[in-house]
View 1 (tube, rainbow, N blue to C red):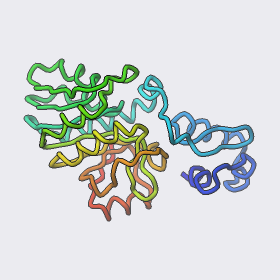
View 2: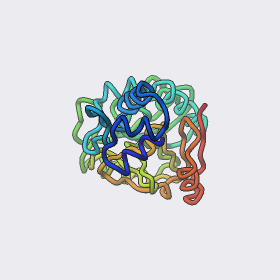
View 3: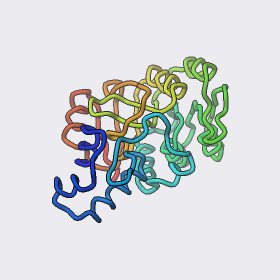
View 4: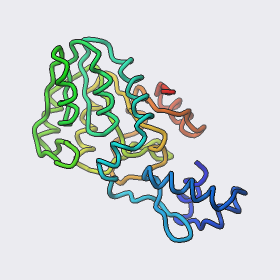
Length: 246
């Protein structure tokens, strides 16, 4: 989005400058800024906007309620890519929790996860075998983190790894907010025969401080809107198959 590009280039952009640049009303700019702020993509200041906080993610409860329709569509398409009887990883994140819900109609899945919420959702299907990593439980979102989680995931080699993300920068670098989460996610990518990233449109261009990998580490990307030309080219050059859930 053009506003995000301006903010990324300048660090801070005044509302008046955006009104002039895009030839729209101040009300339109304020509406767009509020939407981008709600998705954690920038920070509002008096008279303008600056780059989003790249250190901390938004609270789990806020993320769970944000973009529900997009996450549900992404989850349903992702579930259609998983055959019955497959083995798979599901990592931390609200989008992967929607994927878990969408997988309940499958049979005989073998799932390894470091997400208590995912395990609880999948437990409603008695044909599934669910293995959950040990480690430190993060109470606010059910994440299991730490070296024990990484070691547990590293014991497996599974058919599919499904991972969420904090952000994807303009160079195709995969980013997230917690270095412990990132260690487990990297291990999932290394130990999956096929990898699927689930990410809605607001993750593109969103900053975060921990590097998880690159688009080149993926086989598939499932998102909710057509990609910009830059990201489409990055995916093509990285050999990533893009699926649009609409």
